[in-house]
Length: 174
Image (cartoon, rainbow, N blue to C red; front, side, top):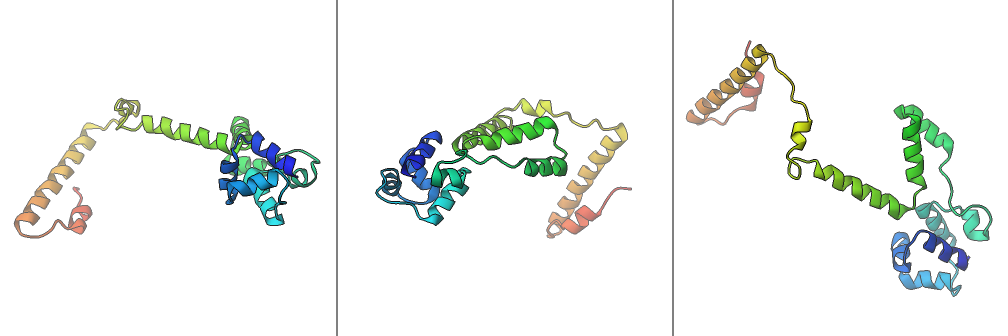
Protein backbone atom coordinates (compact mmCIF):
# COMPACT_ATOMS: atom_id res chain seq x y z
CA UNK A 1 0.00 0.00 0.00
CA UNK A 2 2.93 2.36 0.65
CA UNK A 3 3.78 2.56 -3.05
CA UNK A 4 0.15 3.23 -3.96
CA UNK A 5 -0.15 6.08 -1.45
CA UNK A 6 2.97 7.66 -2.93
CA UNK A 7 1.70 7.06 -6.48
CA UNK A 8 -1.64 8.63 -5.57
CA UNK A 9 0.02 11.67 -4.00
CA UNK A 10 2.21 12.16 -7.07
CA UNK A 11 -0.77 11.70 -9.42
CA UNK A 12 -2.53 14.45 -7.47
CA UNK A 13 0.64 16.55 -7.75
CA UNK A 14 0.69 17.15 -4.00
CA UNK A 15 3.62 17.41 -1.65
CA UNK A 16 3.62 15.24 1.45
CA UNK A 17 2.64 18.34 3.46
CA UNK A 18 -0.26 19.20 1.14
CA UNK A 19 -1.47 15.60 1.18
CA UNK A 20 -1.21 15.53 4.99
CA UNK A 21 -3.12 18.81 5.30
CA UNK A 22 -5.97 17.44 3.18
CA UNK A 23 -6.40 14.36 5.38
CA UNK A 24 -5.72 16.18 8.65
CA UNK A 25 -2.44 14.57 9.63
CA UNK A 26 1.26 15.46 9.77
CA UNK A 27 3.77 15.33 6.95
CA UNK A 28 5.93 12.75 8.71
CA UNK A 29 2.90 10.47 9.07
CA UNK A 30 2.47 10.51 5.29
CA UNK A 31 6.20 9.91 4.88
CA UNK A 32 5.92 6.89 7.22
CA UNK A 33 3.04 5.51 5.13
CA UNK A 34 5.05 5.93 1.93
CA UNK A 35 8.18 4.28 3.35
CA UNK A 36 6.15 1.42 4.84
CA UNK A 37 7.15 2.29 8.43
CA UNK A 38 3.47 2.62 9.35
CA UNK A 39 0.27 1.29 7.83
CA UNK A 40 -2.71 3.66 7.70
CA UNK A 41 -5.70 2.69 9.81
CA UNK A 42 -9.01 1.74 8.18
CA UNK A 43 -10.40 5.17 9.05
CA UNK A 44 -7.42 6.89 7.37
CA UNK A 45 -7.86 4.70 4.28
CA UNK A 46 -11.55 5.64 4.13
CA UNK A 47 -10.65 9.30 4.55
CA UNK A 48 -8.09 9.16 1.73
CA UNK A 49 -10.63 7.48 -0.54
CA UNK A 50 -13.36 9.99 0.28
CA UNK A 51 -11.11 13.07 0.07
CA UNK A 52 -9.50 12.17 -3.25
CA UNK A 53 -12.25 10.03 -4.89
CA UNK A 54 -9.94 7.01 -4.77
CA UNK A 55 -11.07 3.46 -5.44
CA UNK A 56 -10.60 1.74 -2.07
CA UNK A 57 -9.94 -1.63 -3.69
CA UNK A 58 -7.10 -0.08 -5.69
CA UNK A 59 -5.62 1.57 -2.61
CA UNK A 60 -5.73 -1.64 -0.57
CA UNK A 61 -4.81 -4.21 -3.24
CA UNK A 62 -3.72 -2.41 -6.39
CA UNK A 63 -6.63 -3.89 -8.36
CA UNK A 64 -8.87 -1.72 -10.50
CA UNK A 65 -8.62 1.95 -11.38
CA UNK A 66 -6.95 4.49 -9.07
CA UNK A 67 -9.90 6.89 -9.06
CA UNK A 68 -13.59 6.18 -8.87
CA UNK A 69 -15.71 7.72 -11.56
CA UNK A 70 -18.90 9.57 -10.82
CA UNK A 71 -21.79 7.20 -11.52
CA UNK A 72 -23.62 8.24 -14.64
CA UNK A 73 -26.98 7.70 -12.94
CA UNK A 74 -26.12 10.52 -10.51
CA UNK A 75 -25.29 12.81 -13.41
CA UNK A 76 -28.43 11.69 -15.21
CA UNK A 77 -30.49 12.58 -12.13
CA UNK A 78 -28.81 16.03 -11.95
CA UNK A 79 -29.35 16.55 -15.67
CA UNK A 80 -33.03 15.78 -15.29
CA UNK A 81 -33.46 17.85 -12.12
CA UNK A 82 -31.71 20.93 -13.54
CA UNK A 83 -32.65 20.43 -17.18
CA UNK A 84 -28.98 20.21 -18.23
CA UNK A 85 -27.97 19.94 -21.85
CA UNK A 86 -25.45 17.34 -23.02
CA UNK A 87 -22.82 20.08 -22.94
CA UNK A 88 -23.75 20.97 -19.37
CA UNK A 89 -23.46 17.33 -18.32
CA UNK A 90 -20.10 17.01 -20.05
CA UNK A 91 -18.79 20.13 -18.28
CA UNK A 92 -19.84 18.79 -14.88
CA UNK A 93 -18.52 15.30 -15.55
CA UNK A 94 -15.15 16.55 -16.80
CA UNK A 95 -14.87 18.99 -13.89
CA UNK A 96 -15.52 16.20 -11.39
CA UNK A 97 -12.90 14.03 -13.11
CA UNK A 98 -10.23 16.67 -12.43
CA UNK A 99 -7.83 16.48 -9.51
CA UNK A 100 -9.07 18.51 -6.51
CA UNK A 101 -6.28 21.08 -6.79
CA UNK A 102 -7.12 21.65 -10.47
CA UNK A 103 -10.81 22.08 -9.55
CA UNK A 104 -9.77 24.72 -7.01
CA UNK A 105 -7.58 26.50 -9.56
CA UNK A 106 -10.51 26.65 -11.99
CA UNK A 107 -12.85 27.95 -9.30
CA UNK A 108 -10.30 30.63 -8.34
CA UNK A 109 -9.96 31.64 -11.99
CA UNK A 110 -13.74 31.92 -12.41
CA UNK A 111 -13.96 34.10 -9.29
CA UNK A 112 -11.23 36.40 -10.66
CA UNK A 113 -13.01 36.71 -13.99
CA UNK A 114 -16.31 37.48 -12.25
CA UNK A 115 -14.61 40.13 -10.08
CA UNK A 116 -13.27 41.77 -13.22
CA UNK A 117 -16.81 42.42 -14.36
CA UNK A 118 -17.90 44.15 -11.17
CA UNK A 119 -18.41 47.88 -11.47
CA UNK A 120 -15.39 48.55 -9.23
CA UNK A 121 -12.96 46.79 -11.52
CA UNK A 122 -14.61 47.20 -14.89
CA UNK A 123 -16.89 50.26 -15.04
CA UNK A 124 -17.83 49.54 -18.65
CA UNK A 125 -19.59 46.37 -17.45
CA UNK A 126 -22.63 48.45 -16.55
CA UNK A 127 -22.91 49.36 -20.22
CA UNK A 128 -23.23 45.64 -21.01
CA UNK A 129 -26.45 45.40 -18.98
CA UNK A 130 -29.32 46.97 -20.87
CA UNK A 131 -31.28 49.50 -18.84
CA UNK A 132 -35.02 49.05 -19.06
CA UNK A 133 -36.75 51.62 -21.24
CA UNK A 134 -39.50 53.41 -19.36
CA UNK A 135 -42.48 55.03 -20.96
CA UNK A 136 -42.91 58.77 -20.42
CA UNK A 137 -45.73 58.05 -17.98
CA UNK A 138 -43.64 55.51 -15.98
CA UNK A 139 -40.71 57.91 -15.86
CA UNK A 140 -42.93 60.77 -14.63
CA UNK A 141 -44.51 58.52 -11.98
CA UNK A 142 -41.05 57.40 -10.74
CA UNK A 143 -39.86 61.03 -10.53
CA UNK A 144 -43.04 62.03 -8.70
CA UNK A 145 -42.67 59.21 -6.17
CA UNK A 146 -39.04 60.15 -5.59
CA UNK A 147 -40.02 63.81 -5.12
CA UNK A 148 -42.87 62.81 -2.77
CA UNK A 149 -40.54 60.70 -0.60
CA UNK A 150 -38.00 63.54 -0.40
CA UNK A 151 -40.65 66.09 0.68
CA UNK A 152 -42.13 63.64 3.20
CA UNK A 153 -38.70 62.95 4.71
CA UNK A 154 -38.01 66.72 4.99
CA UNK A 155 -41.35 67.40 6.70
CA UNK A 156 -40.88 64.51 9.15
CA UNK A 157 -37.36 65.70 9.94
CA UNK A 158 -38.61 69.25 10.45
CA UNK A 159 -41.33 67.97 12.77
CA UNK A 160 -38.71 66.02 14.74
CA UNK A 161 -39.95 62.69 13.56
CA UNK A 162 -37.80 60.02 11.99
CA UNK A 163 -38.79 59.02 8.50
CA UNK A 164 -41.22 56.23 9.10
CA UNK A 165 -40.66 53.39 6.69
CA UNK A 166 -44.33 52.47 7.04
CA UNK A 167 -45.57 55.88 5.97
CA UNK A 168 -43.03 56.14 3.17
CA UNK A 169 -43.24 52.64 1.74
CA UNK A 170 -46.98 52.39 2.23
CA UNK A 171 -47.72 55.61 0.37
CA UNK A 172 -48.07 55.39 -3.38
CA UNK A 173 -49.22 57.91 -5.87
CA UNK A 174 -52.47 57.02 -7.51
